Image (cartoon, rainbow, N blue to C red; front, side):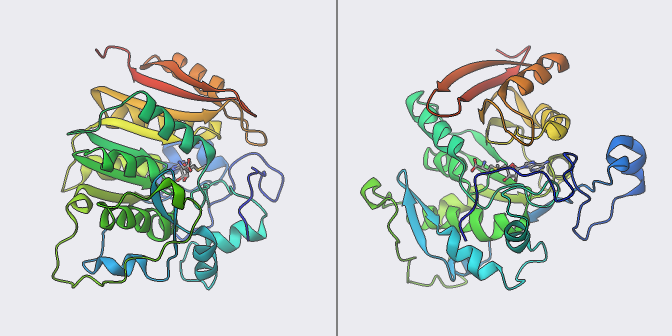
Length: 326
Ligand SMILES: C[S@@+](CC[C@H](N)C(=O)[O-])C[C@H]1O[C@@H](n2cnc3c(N)ncnc32)[C@H](O)[C@@H]1O
């Protein structure tokens, strides 16, 4: 099955997020705190940290690697095939297939495929020579995690990856990061783009250390507010991020509050967010102008357009910083 590039409203035709079909119950406290969410019966997805197994080769089991823009990534069709047997409780592959959609609000948020603004942001980071060395970076709504992998390649001090869906983190993000770290010496050649590459055949022994770059990575799944709380209360607390990279994450205006507050709580005082987005997301309603307006109204951040892409539906890269930052 190919993933579709469309956003469909939920089966009942409503634009509101659907009732969450996962197992985590809504806490009564949260229901009281947020009347609107309670009314629409949206549950928030609990946050979880995913650890890299000691035997790192397990992460690439049953995976077929491809390359794009000089990076390795797992073939999504193979992942779809191996995930249709109920391997994951979320069951997002079957749900996405049966609802004919790349997006099921509150259930599956689109991370199984690579969206085009990711490539816009990768181009921008390279053109603008954004420096990652010694910086802490968050790839927010990471999906395949290519932005975080670029930061890792640029010698970031630490890179964290967040996606709504645990299946995405386990089946796509972590394998991609591992594939690029294991193959760190041999940058995927752009001439290889689209070709299938064999995963490294040599199994690492359990006792073997993780490749150095992998020790700089942490992986999280769950809703933005929940992941934010987990990060801030973690027994292994992280410093705030110098850079937050995020692509195609502002399609749903219902999530703007959670996204805004997460950025506000996790960005370092003089940090920068680079956000890539289409001008408008038909069927869901969000887009660049609406998010900029939201930022203006909240009066916490300033934002400016640093790149526009004119081909097809217009796309933008925004640079966002605290109003009082240098
Ligand atoms: C359309 S996908 C984009 C994936 C990737 N950044 C790309 O450009 O290919 C949107 C991503 O945002 C994340 N996301 C959207 N809404 C979210 C929410 N309310 N809480 C947490 N993550 C969310 C999902 O994890 C999803 O992977």
